[in-house]
Amino acid sequence: MALTDFFEQAFAPADASIQAGKIPGAVLGIVTADGKRAVQWAGLAQIEPVRENVSRETWFDLASLTKVIFTTTRILKLVEEGRIALDDPLVSVIPDLRQYDMNAAERRLTFRQCLAHQTHLPAVEPLYTYGQDPNTLRAFILQRVWQPGPPVYSDINFILLGIAIERITGEALIDQPLPERFSFRPDPKLCAATEKDTWRGRVIKGEVHDENAFALGGASGHAGLFGTIDGVLDFAHSLLDGSALSSDSIKAIRTRESDKRTIGWEGFYPGWHGGDACSPGTIGHTGFTGTGLWIDWERGLAWSLLTNRVHPSRHKDSGILPLRRATGEQVIALFDRHV
Image 1: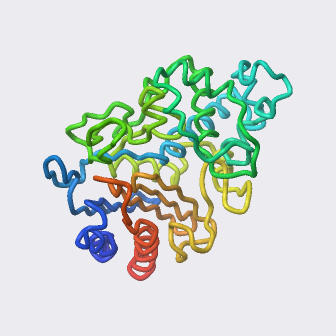
Image 2: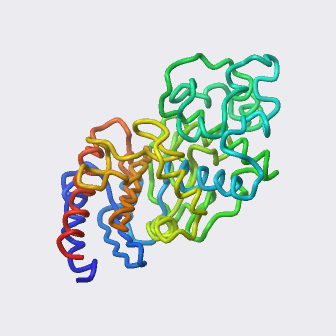
Image 3: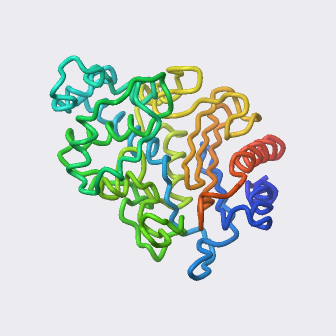
């Protein structure tokens, strides 16, 4: 049976969320290892100041999917090219990291630790409140005395990895080459709107929602990437068929570095956003704006749910966790039954 024959049922949780007014719009896509795919969408890309419909071609602010689609993949490609090793310290390419204290803990951080969120760095910091000049803000991040704490999922880890990519390649992140259907500079007319931002004083559309990424110039290692559902599915398929990365790199993103983390990705655990029906080796990642991608290697199946759940405000209950879980469980149940 073709994927499209049951896909309307897989989209039912997202459709219910739209009808209930919890999210403005959504696009759901699935792709298999042999390249079959199905996509469905509904709702609005923008509610205010004018209403615009979602389509298959709508570009979404992928938020923290930047971490896996761009940053993790780029770092692993640099490892494959022999330019760095996962266990190299960041100071091998950022020698000025905490340059006034040669014994600083940050100088001992490795690429592996940052990718797997096994550092002492905090989850997030309102860096944009310290200024908006990207170069000065990068210098501030490198020289800041970060307070130690237990390992947590940290944007700061990936901001540092983004700076490392810039140092290695000699190119700003916003100018880095990207696959088709991805961009750090999308056409705003093609984008789903995100928040009506009190800081910027406008509805955000076609510019990164994350304040720190915006202050860093629009692109950072943790956020800033935009893409369409077909771009995300292309990426997922390139992992499933092994064309995106070497076998060693694929092994790295599938191997646990901690209970919940692999290199760059989150691994399955009961109660996670991908739902409990997926295989134990499934990996996934989410984005604050309402995006997500999951790859079930055992089934040869990936699915992505893209929403603009922060439009027009993040300060509401969008029900995104139960929506993601219900979607993943529905996708897998229908896939197992019909394919």
